[in-house]
Length: 118
View: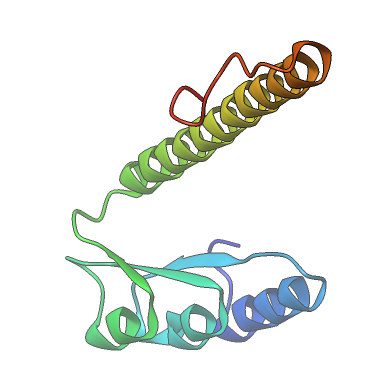
């Protein structure tokens, strides 16, 4: 909500958090401090921001460029997606190796893969 009063910002933050949403607010002035403090993620501007806003926020954007926040969020989502893919791959490989070992051990009595190979 751009160009709104500090009370409106704070009211919106409280309403969204009450509904279970994760809320992030950017601000650079003293009047933004209550909303920055109440949010899950408070972002303040490093160059133009006041000291009160910087102290109330969780993250200080050093270059005052909101595009850097967008880049960081995209990067974080890509890292999260890659971790999910890696875990899915590892689970698939390990379950397949376990099934192969169990079936081979039951049918022939020999284990094709030892613990080091798995």
